[in-house]
Length: 180
Image 1: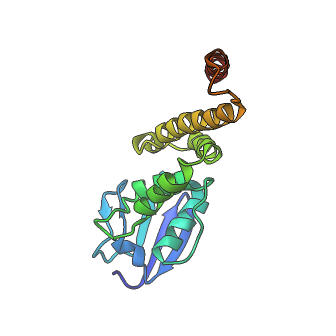
Image 2: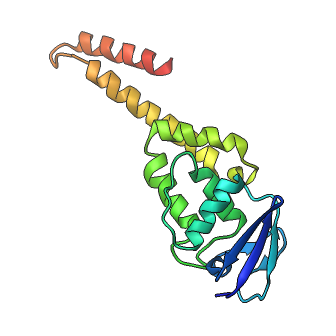
């Protein structure tokens, strides 16, 4: 772990970090600068996805501070973690892993959250496509919409097991409803 004060320059904003634990957790790929084991006092980051709020959350993660991953910030955090290569090579339970768990366990399980995350991807660079966030959200939207339609359709079915004509008409309206 690098000890001392590190000055990070990002989009003209100076961040001063002391006893910077994140140096053992990420690499600045733009500059090709691996922080692990370096005695640097200044590091400039270019094109970090997600803005200053995302950068702040990534630093909170590095310092072990609590913060909430939400549908509004998970895509930004995942892209920033990818950009900084916050992988298991540098730390177990890294930011890539935490955001992936949230995407898989929370976002893709919900139609509403998948739509929200997909809408945040519009503001992200191509790195979002590289880590397949939009594709996973679109797939989740399709699956969850189908599930909701199926549940809705089945709850409207009031078919008597004895009547095949009634069953047929119920299935027909359900197929028409699903295809709309």
